[in-house]
Length: 97
Image (cartoon, rainbow, N blue to C red; front, top):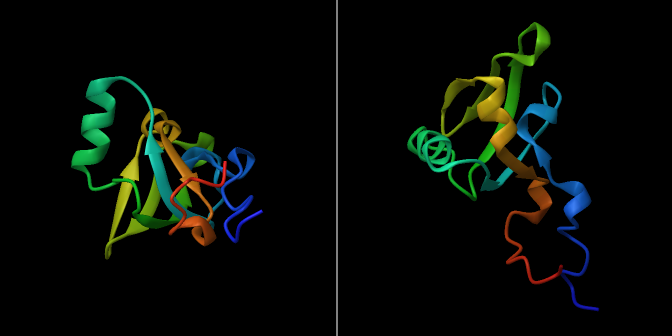
């Protein structure tokens, strides 16, 4: 069992839309079809980006996140496609799975 063992258990990853206000983490990956992935990546939400949920509208649409010095609002379908891992796993290469 290495130092990184268990740090990125898939149970700890969740969709951005599932985070509560004030929660944050690191973008692990973007899921979805090609055009959705491209749109999210163009907004700057690339794997490795740290973020924090700033606010959520009623029914979670939109979700506002803070990263790289600015706030971005995402539709719920976009937030569902962004998979977040806890910040403690930011440097994990994923070999612990």
